[in-house]
Length: 79
Image (tube, rainbow, N blue to C red; front, side, top):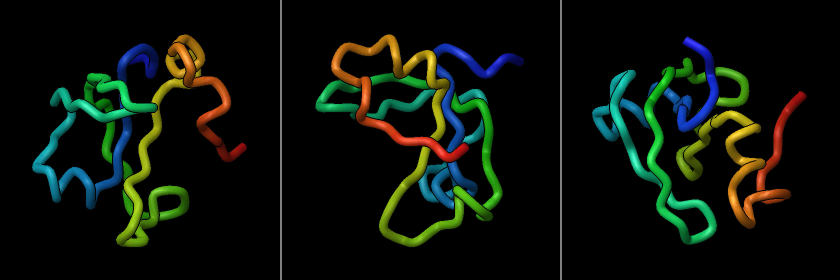
């Protein structure tokens, strides 16, 4: 399944906390605007997804963010 459009990857801990499984739809707020995503994957708690207890990290397709009004330059990435 291609990772594009309204897809999201969350950490295992976040998915356990909110009882989410792949294919579930969830809504998050970006710049005050609620956006719906489909959970495409669950990441193990290593590297980028290592939990710090204070933040919830998410990955969405860059192309999707680039098409949101006002969303350019509000995100960062690791290359």
